[in-house]
Image (cartoon, rainbow, N blue to C red; front, side, top):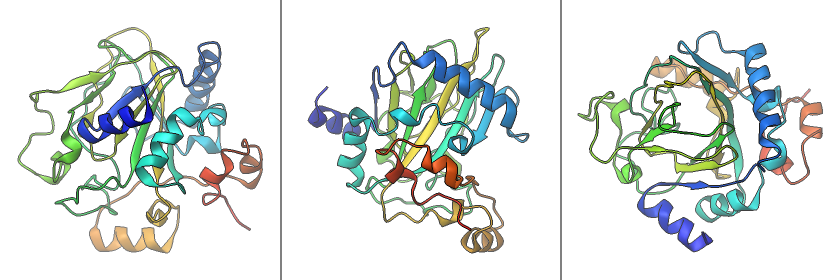
Amino acid sequence: MTLEQALRRMDTDGFLVVDDVVPSGEVSAVRESIRETTQRHQNPNAPLHIGHVSGVIRYDRSLAPYLANPRVLDIVCALLGPHVRISFTTATINEPGNVRSGWHADWPFNQQNAGHLPAPYPDVVMHLTTIWMLSSFSDDNGSTLIVPGSHRFPSNPTGNNGVAPMAVLTGEKRACGQAGSVLIMDSRLWHATAPNTTSEPRVAVVVRYAPWWLDLSVLRPDSPERSYMERVTGKKDNQVPLLTADGFASLPEDVKPLFQHWVETG
């Protein structure tokens, strides 16, 4: 797929899958590392049968060598501009027996977050969500449910837009791919967690990319912006741990610019 073809797919469908970003001979080691890290740092408030670690890059940098892969970053920069940053790295594991989640769009379009863009949204790409498939995503193991083209909709079911979050929607599909592939989607795209009906966990890391101008302050632990937004809205927001200075220093040189805004100081 050429860059022009990829951008056309993103414009029309709001998503695409890039194959073999993490080489087949290397993906199993990354998968096992993320599984072990998730066991050690599991979010105690995560839904049942969902492994979840926010800011996993702080604890595990096994995926770091691939995050600036040109086959992904060229698409990201074509959509967001040349000075992109990573806003989230989240380990996400669908264990056997997990249940389906409701339709939603990601931050800053999820209306349940303290910091969010009010609907109706302008038809502009502002944030990209990528899901790094460390296990193969299949119809049976909880591959992400998506609604192609929904990134052009003015709102989503987190904002009481008249669509039931658990509804079966015309045109919905599953985003499948082999281990090592990356799902890229506009963060406005409606998507949902699907049940894993197999006996094996489905392992992924969600990495979100932001343009330089998008304010990420509400995501920083203990930031004044975070405290203010939660106080005035009465809602909570995502909290993304910062990288340590040593952790940042260990990143590949081409990846450091993506995280230089998210490092502990003092």
